[in-house]
Length: 114
Image (cartoon, rainbow, N blue to C red; front, side, top):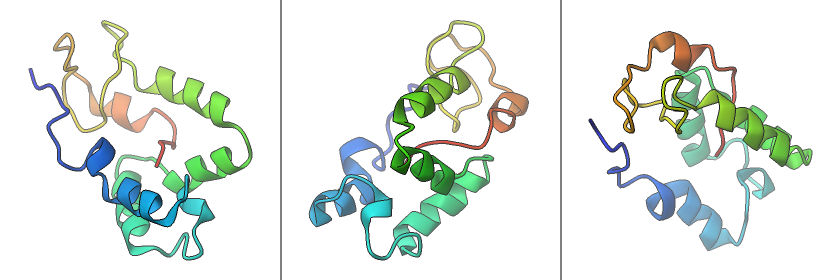
């Protein structure tokens, strides 16, 4: 099994997190160049390959629907076998090893956070 968290692009190493911190912002939509930012567009376009819209997620956040969005995401990205969180980038749950089919990844709705 893969632990799924070895990327240098996650958490504090994320280019978008670093950009937000440097600008003193909490969300990309607060930036003057959003949604035309090159970094945001690259991540948003990549996420669309998985059927997820970062722009829609940010709109929910901006509208004050954070708790609802978090609940949707928690359910959407949960292993059907063990119930623990899964990653859209893996083909198996890194907790229990259950296969994560393409149908799970693509039929989960259209949102994920940025």
